[in-house]
Amino acid sequence: MSQSAPTREVARRVFATEFNDATFSFKESDDERAPVYSLLPTGERANRVFIVGTLTETEDVGEDSEYWRGRVVDPTGTFFVYAGQYQPEAASALRDLDTPSYVAIVGKPRTYETEDGSVNVSVRPESITEVSSAVRDRWVVETAERTLERVEAFEEEGNEYARRAEEEYDLPLSRYTQGAIEALESLDENEEVEQPA
Amino acid sequence: MSDIQQTASDLYEQFSDHVDVTEDEIEERLDKLVSEYKVPLSEARRSVESHYLEEAGLERDDIGSRGGNETVQVEDVDEAEQWVDITAKVVDLWEPRSDSVGQVGLLGDPTGTIKFTKWAKSDLAELEEGGVYRFGNVVTDEYQGRFSVKLNRTTTIEELDEDIEVGDNDETVEGALVDIQSGSGLIKRCPEEDCTRVLQNGRCSEHGEVDGEFDLRIKGVLDDGEDVHEVIFNDESTESLTGIGLEEAKQMAKDALDTTVVADEMRDLVLGRYYRVTGPTLGRYVLANDIEELSAPADAEAVLIKARSM
View 1: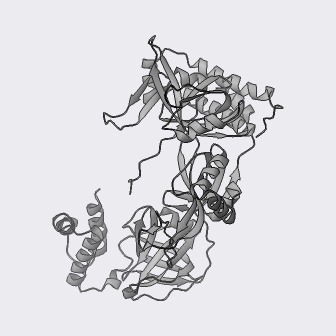
View 2: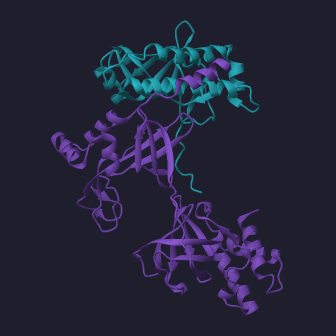
View 3: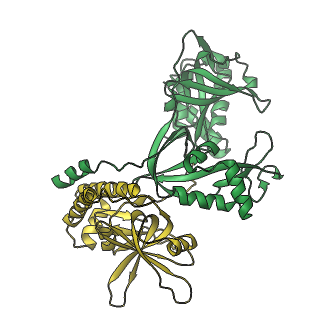
């Protein structure tokens, strides 16, 4: 069968807490152009993520050229999104969008080491679009579901990325189960709050 | 079992009653043609078949559908070069584009539809649209992920006095629309008859520089966090997805002196939203005939109950 087209990487669903904990990244081969994966603590590799949250703040943090940083908040924490001249559409979206507003972002996980030696995780966006609160609520439920599925599969035999996560991280999985529960519970509370689309 | 071994074993079943031959001998003949003389396996099979037909003094029709072909349904066809029997209804007959093709069209059974080709030189009975037939010994083929069956000289056709309810091969996929690929939005197609290729910089890969005809299309990616599905929206479904019709798109492009504004606008309107799409598959694409935006929040309660139990 023809396998000429490379398989597109799935966009993982992950809450901010877990995403920011995923400080370990790796490649599956030595090839320079091989995709980089971030290792999710719940035992999955992520080369792409799909996140939906509230854009609360945008700032041009560039020195010579524009380099936009956006803070995108979900029920568990904050994603940091950076877009510069190589992500022109995403950069102009951050420039133009009002805060607060709900946004959907498709992007790649990126890690960088700070001066004090800690590792920060951020999103390099492929696209940013404004969405409705319904999309955001749907994402919260979906992301909770996917997170729980990963936690459930963690102890399964042959779960390669779970074993790797065990080696690389020392974080209790309950952190993510609890995060999912709180995220779901938060949906009830703000049901009435409608964001203009 | 290699393809050659499989073919050898098929042929052995076909001929063991007629000629004194072993499976190894057949395999050796096939292997010589395929490995040494670089003949495609289908041709090698034909050649070896001819050899034994002659040896046995038989005509191709004599061995016909013998040899233990598998009787399959349309949805089971997922591999090329398989000799199978199939019972199906002629759903559609198309205009053959080549003199070598006798009849071409669509066969259907309850599991779906599949293209068929009947070669002009294979000297078979004329098929009628709406007719139901039992086809013996047809060979499967694949082109760009789409399967078809070829009727050939050895095929037997028996008209049946029954009707078949033809099913569709529709697939339903859902997820967030995470990407709109290049070649989407307001595009131009080659105006040559039966061509419809999408032009690149005003050029058709087959007919060169032509005056293209505008069309709307979206090639998108639906992603549910576990799998990705590529989806094509034609002009009609693009309009129902985005609310932008062909005339409006042309006007937008005219105002901006740029056709790419249409795709950009469409990205803003649909990326990041959830959709459920149903339609037939074409290679790795699902053709979006039916589109539903999933705007209602999913069932949080069920997930919450599961989470609390963990």
